[in-house]
Length: 306
Image (tube, rainbow, N blue to C red; front, side):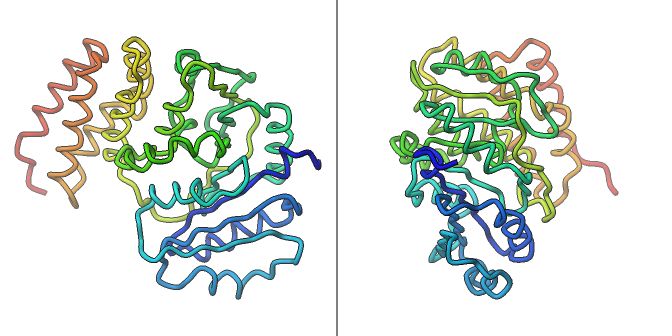
């Protein structure tokens, strides 16, 4: 395992105030690290600097290339993920969630897959929640949309490997689309054009084990993702992509979440209506249109006293 492709390989971990979980994740990662791997940890201005916290818990050997960068201020989770792309100095990037545990042979699987598919722009591995029966390859944005099989797996960064050299050409677009909650995916969509190659692998590299409290709102993600189709120029491709990504999570679940959540009632109802409006824009089926209108109307009614 010493090819050029394997040497150009960075594992980047964006993190904020999760030193205990981060330590556990890095501890599981260390036995797999080889001299040609680069470990990049980006601290989003945690209350206690990650460099101080992790180095008091883990002793890195001299043959491990590790770099810890601390942002001057908290720039948000999405922007911190893009910092991984910005600061990556190798051709390939694996962006690993600080609370996601990779499997024991994951880095070897990644290296072998890169070595066998050096011209890919993006490699998407399966998850335990969604396992493909076979590998699939797309070329260009139209084929990518046709083959795209599971939105959460596409969105889950810990199952994704990016050709950072190619992706950096669209980094400005990614920053402009932070509100989509899928900034790297927005850069990918623009990078595909007519010849960008994507591999959908049947192999699994990460166990999605979220040990931390949820830090995201499904309504924010749902409303944001429906802006992504705007990045696709061809109308038929744009509509096809919108239909695919609208399916998960379901509109009934989102309506229920908007109705029962107390902390930010007004914002959640507003986000739900944005989601429904975007579904209408892309004509996501008559049933969704009618059903969405009904649910939007119901959400405007006064909530019952608890």
